[in-house]
Image 1: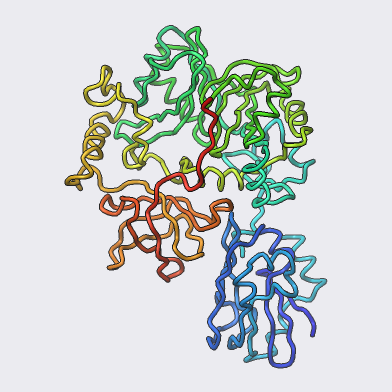
Image 2 (image 1 turned 135 degrees about the horizontal axis):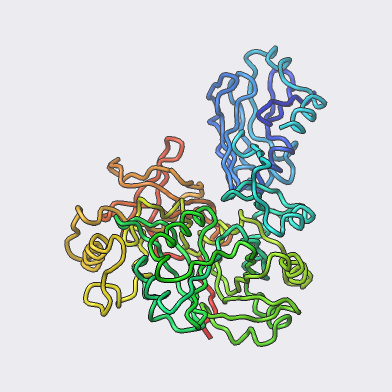
Length: 123
Length: 391
């Protein structure tokens, strides 16, 4: 259950064939108070890098990219109802969606915590 | 998420006299109108917005342009640039104005104040100030003295508790009502203040010498009601109050009538008025006013094809600037110019230009957000009731 990160400031937690995806602490801090999320449809498949959702604060909207290829198996209805979970608990109850991995090897290309920390400091 | 996370702060940006204070307060600085400005402080946009609606918020708006027009002919001269009654404004009073281009497009919106003694004090938008001053100088520089005031900062204290703070630090300031003002001292700092603002709340805008600005800001922030507020909340507050942002909701491609700013054009400058016309674009603007007055009947689509309206989304989905608008039949009818989820309104709100046939409150239409239709309804402005102090 290692946490991996993308350059688009999403995190991925793989658990067997299914990975959970959310936005990072850095991302929610940059966005400010999240007031809206648009989540993908369950059952829909995405390639890695495709836009799978949207997260909006009062001041800005940002796309949420698919960190890995696969099919959406579940979305966080609690986050849809209370988007502020993305600010208050971004790495746990503020998760966005779960995806059934079509190519687990894609995880290897993502950053680990140390690399991401360096990356977001430079960003 | 590039757009939200982009952080560019080139050294070429100008700094207001409060720059160091903003940084010390933990502000996130962003480029705005050529200045490094605080978009939010650690409390965040939502908390800052709500604090301004409940307490008192302090804004640095020193990027805005301040100038004086001086001379016995100043008011008459300034009136030739705007569809507004300048000559009739009594000393001690402030009014909203619009600089127009020769085709009736809006060069800038502004506030002007009659200081008496043949002197007008004018506040213009930061991004427009160089062009405004050049325009004013070119058009009326021979009739009055145009005096830019670059050595002055501008602060705004806004919110239902602003008047109590001012009464404590500047006894006597409570005598001013909305859109009046004068010279006063706050503590021992000499300022020029008017009871006005850009949030829909009661409050003051305060012009102060640049070298006293930080002392004034620190004095105001030391009051228990007052917290610093960034440009992010300033934008959500003004949108809820139904106020235009120049460059978004109005610009050179929009006329005052298209922008639904008819209220800013007093009768004396309209057809049949004592000083009707005589401003840039008058033929077009006065013809559009005649059409707007007759809106209940047949609309002349040639003269007035679109109007600025307020919109609320009927689903909880923010509808942002640039979003296309359609009729339910799929006909393109306009575009959103400002939009967000209003923190106090607690629903998605927007301003937009729509075809005149769709401009009546209660009309429903749809916004196309990421390819999906979101139903919206035209509604009267403001979205949140204004609380100006009128005495």
